[in-house]
Image (cartoon, rainbow, N blue to C red; front, top):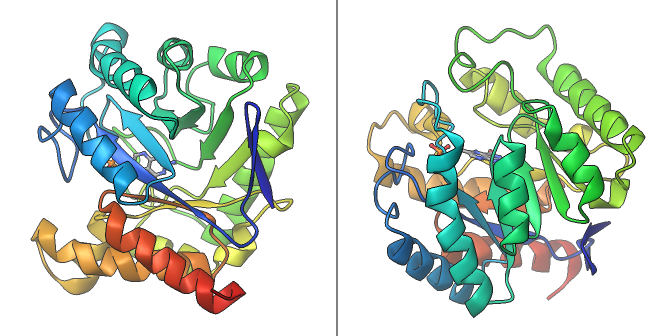
Length: 279
Ligand code: HH2
């Protein structure tokens, strides 16, 4: 199982990746405002690399339920200085978490390697064209509606079949646009237009979400579904369950885990992989 990102081809068969979250935003659900200053975001991101992050996912627009959309100029103002500074100081893979093709293009020009689009490259008509022209890695995620509306009574007849069908469809659309399948990673989009039961069902059926051998990315770090399961409203209480979810996701086939707390999750990933494949 490989992922091609520009000139690099990563073999994810027995070694998965940790994607560290860098939210350069005032309003992200778990760390909004903490890294809105570019200097602090860069410092935090480099600490994540030291802790074992393989990818840094830079986001300038929160996608939490009901988040206010951010304009292109503001999003660029937030993310570009961080990407430029990181590129000049580190070889680490950088992904841009955006729904806008213009932001993705500027981020690639500034040195980003991967586009992570929570709309599955459906949100902006120019995104598929950009992805076909560039040689970057791609993450296509499942979401119902948009962040404004996604949690308004999401409904599925069969959540696993429908999310899988969507991922199959996105892979088909992207490859028909001339994008090599080896560049594409798929993500079921936990907590994006899903109830707690939908999320738990998807987590229970992860192997069924692997489409054509493409790597699966899971992002569940500190998300609200954890608070619901453990009956706690404290963000700090979501730390340990996130680590359990990392081990579970890797054991059940996920290869890229998107997290806020890199060190413990990287260690959980390595421990799980030692059991699966040997130390
Ligand atoms: N989750 C969030 C943002 N981007 N991208 C992918 N591929 N998968 C995810 O699950 C995912 C994502 C939401 O988390 P976070 O970035 O911490 O919060 P916010 O959107 O409020 O900035």
